[in-house]
Length: 165
Image (cartoon, rainbow, N blue to C red; front, side, top):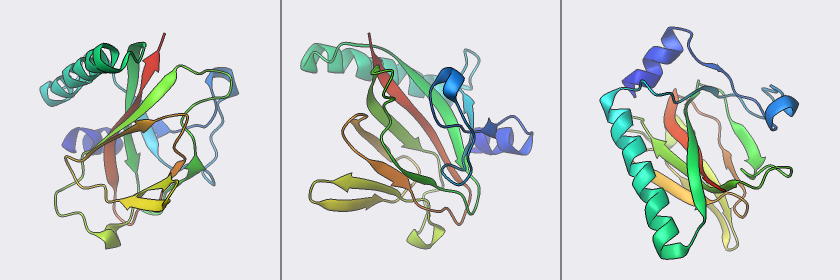
C-alpha cells in the first residue's frame, strides 16, 4: 500500500469521476475516492499483479470463452469519510467491462470498525467484504451491484476491469 500512500501524499492522485469519457463528472456525494491509472513504469510488485491479470484474462478466455481483450486498472484511495454509492461497473454506452477486479492493499490488521467494506448485493441479500490486504475480489461488472461503505481509515486498492473486444 506504500506506493498508493506515496502517490496520495505527493498529490499524484485525482478525484475519481463517474460516467464514461466526455461525460465524466466528479461528484463527491456519489464517489469520494482518488485514483491514478496504472502506467508502463510501475514498481515490481505492481508489475507482478499486472502479469497475473494478464494470466487471468488468458485463463478466462481459454476456460470460459470470455472474449476478453485487455484490462484497465487504477490505484484507488478512499480517504477517511469517503465512500462510493451503490452502482454497476458497466456503462450503458460501453459494454466492454466484463469483470470487475479489486485487490486490497490495506494492512492485514484491517478491522470492521475501519470501514470501507465492499457491499455486494447478491440475490440472497447483501454481503460485506472486509478490505483486508491481499484479498482479491472478482465479479461480473454488468450483473452485481455494489458499493463502498464509508472508510474510517485510508483504504487502498488496485481496482479495474477485464474488458471484452
